[in-house]
Image (cartoon, rainbow, N blue to C red; front, side, top):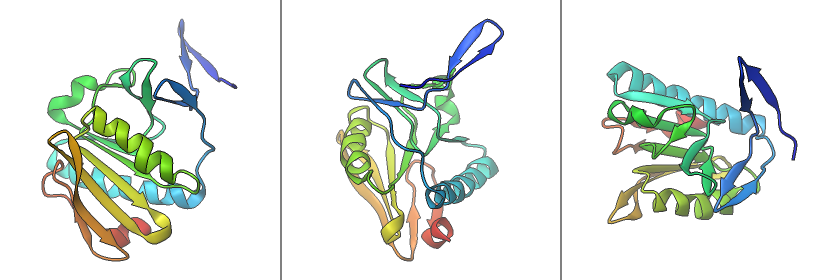
Length: 177
């Protein structure tokens, strides 16, 4: 595996873009431009609302979310942390963000909708967004009785609403434009 290191003072920082999923290192190819365009749109929409209402911070991949050292270290495409949960933001995210989002890329459907969803559910991430560009679908799941339940859904047109980011509604055309 190829690793890149940068020395900052006397501290070496590992910029390795792998994830650790159920104890196994996984290396995915970098996303296509369309994926990044969608990530940028979604980030801008959520960040604008979060910043206007001063309720937390929104981050983009690559940024490690370490649920359990050596066992599960994921890099969701977009994530949100409420102000009162910001103690988890350290060198990386060490703990459970309030919302995570995965944009499905070609070849990542099973990983994002089953494997990662199961991990996010296990650690009780309060809200999980799945965005499927190919079909212009956005699904939002929330934790209820320790299991994900679909909270909001839109396909081709319409709006989705967040439960965790109170008051946030997103027209999905603004995500896929």
